Image (tube, rainbow, N blue to C red; front, top):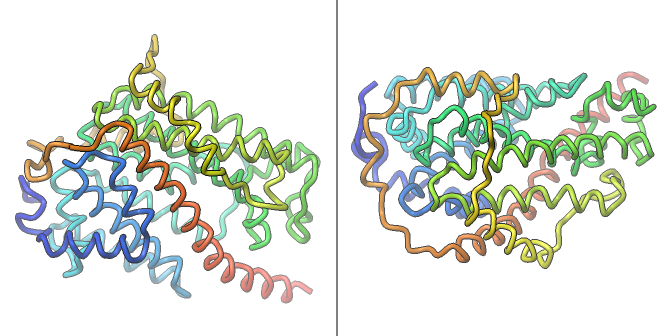
Length: 374
């Protein structure tokens, strides 16, 4: 593959980047806002990354032929990594990012694999299976964002994976009821059985009970452990990136606290963190950014995310980061955090819209399967 010093030198023209911004701004304001978690100098690369992830996500979610949609996405990745992307703005822009930041092919491949597991309606017997799924649908994005921040150290990549997995565990704990009503369950099946809940029986008429609550609580405890581990990696990011990522860490963990306030009942209703509570986290975010967390010894990656860390280690580092993306940041620390607070408000709105769209399809499929069994 040719090495480019600028993302718009061959693949990504200013028009392509503008089209990526429009895709995010018009179709997903939350993703557009998310690019500003990073300082200005890498916003363009983040926009390109998020645009491709959004296009890929929609290609699967909105398709009634998910297997064919996934095959088409893999073909698009083949072309991107061959240096011959399809004449589509998101593909050309992502090809530039892949080249400039030396993103190993195994990372976006794993993201598509996670989409495939979702399309299959796969369930997970134990926590390791949930970790493996979370590594693909969330850890991969954390790895790619970390590479955009110019960090490739294995410990930092491992902690980015921890953060992605923790956020996905929080998602699972929050969405138990909505998933169940669509015939899906992401909680570890063995944990449910240990708590006295038979998954197949429960899915026929999902309701909250003590066993489900105990399983949700157990998952949130594990998420908290990973959020704590992630803090060590955030401390090793460029200072201009820390506030936004700490905000993501604390604000997402707060979703777990809201589930706790509901008595672990994420079946009857979906936990939503009030905006006032989000703003109350401002001081914690600022302190965590100003006083980096320390660790006495290195923490190995999760076994389920090790392949992502090793993929980055094996990849050739870029000759230099793209100079055209490096512009002095004018955003103050408190402005970064305020932007992220707004981002999470938008994320919740988008989540509700996406889940309603996705689950309406899943409910129809689940109902049809149930009717066939009768």
